Image (tube, rainbow, N blue to C red; front, side, top):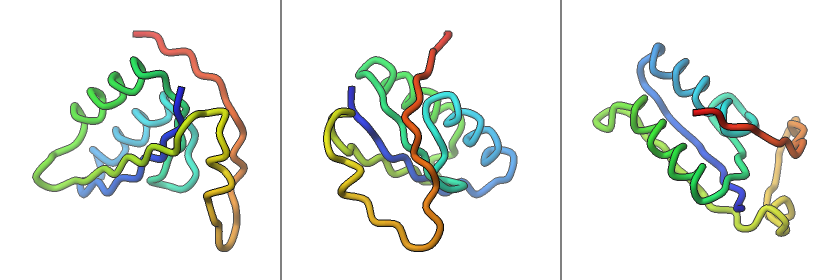
Length: 96
């Protein structure tokens, strides 16, 4: 299981809301359009499919950064300026 940081820029408000709701099912919001997700390879592929169902590839962009193993030291590689959001490790159940 790896940890990913997903950052997105979605232009249309309705798609933006759908994207936020989609990402809430996979991880925790660090900022409005930035999520941290700990995912198995299977759930990573499911997340990619869900994102592609939401975005318009001609207008929107999504950046996915693989931070490595969930048990790794990925938190040490992050630097925050200003208010740091709690990064509580959460467990998610996926029902499809």
